[in-house]
Figure: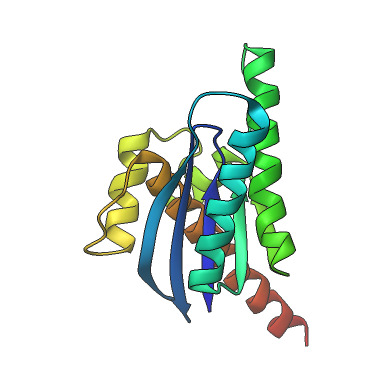
Length: 164
């Protein structure tokens, strides 16, 4: 099974694709879809087209998107929410199941604590996906989201087997 993790951002939308085979995880590719400064509409369109191209190239089975947090800048939060809409729309249009995870849930799954720093997350992603080279911090975060989704799906599958 292939999972694409997405870290929403208006300037840099990170993405990472992993393969899941039972308990084994394997890195396939990661990257960042960029949008240039300017009007919001064209920026969102660029993110959408770029993310759709990644999904078409890798044909994942499911997607995972990090939920946004509310920060002190209301305008920035709204723009980030619009970028997150693109992060949900592109996989939905491709017919993918989408999991959504709070940043603390991702950190807790990958590192073991909900308030881990970026360096700790990147260290654990490198440990879980040996040899991975990150396209940038946003791509590393996206891989962490994909790993979180893989673990949650495995847990869900075990609960279903146990109840059958």
